[in-house]
Amino acid sequence: MTRLMTITALLFSIFSFANVAQGKPTNSGSPEEFIQFYFDAFNDEDEKRLEMVFLKPFYSFSGDKVTVYKSWREYINYEVVKKTGWSYSSLDNSKVVFRNETTAAVSVDFARWRDDQSKILSTRVLFVVTKQNGDWRMASVVIPSDVPTNQ
Image 1 (spheres, rainbow, N blue to C red):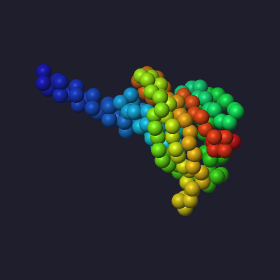
Image 2 (image 1 turned 60 degrees about the horizontal axis):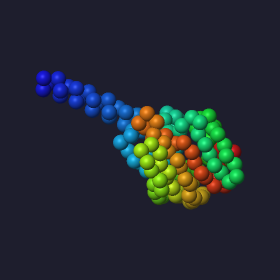
Image 3 (image 1 turned 30 degrees about the vertical axis):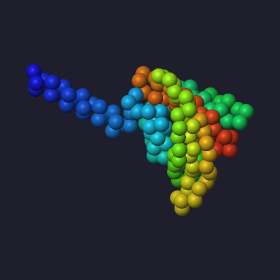
Image 4 (image 1 turned 90 degrees about the horizontal axis):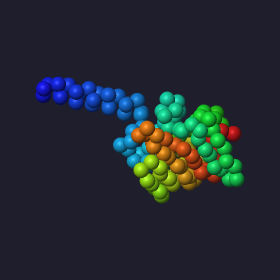
């Protein structure tokens, strides 16, 4: 019986590790950790992880414009972002400003950087994240209109 329990625990640990290694967001992390997960996926241009990040549809509020995206690929166009000289983004500060069991609003200060470590821009956005099937997902963003993402 002890051996069976040990084997079961070992298998559970292996499957849990596999989910983390694959970058699967889990409900064990905080909304802020999930935002870091998103920034890591964005910087790595990791399509598989980005697919796990965004809800479908995803909403963007920018200036007086509200846009509904069917997938993250409509929202993020790396060619447009790279035309600014972008090499990577840094998550400078994040703060949960609202949270309940299934939804959180996270205020985020971030910057975009060039290869030579010169700053392209620094700004603040508001992400709304929600738990779907136990995992955090990006539901919407309020972002300044001068931050290029797809046009």
